[in-house]
Image (cartoon, rainbow, N blue to C red; front, top):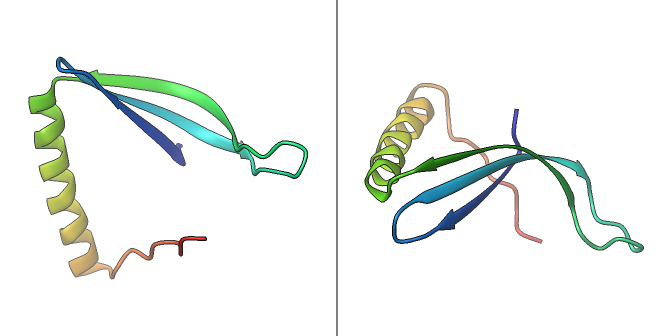
Length: 74
């Protein structure tokens, strides 16, 4: 399970760093704590195809199950 994804890019690859949020920010610690779980690296071409397939898959999911709600920005 992951609920945090960071993406880093270079001319040669895309890095997807997956993590799980461990705790929300507090007044004493104004940053979210995230436990890193794993990393996937792929070529820009592979990342572009993944984005295409993911968009098609999400569209199909929403067409059959319903719209995926997004949280409101703060």
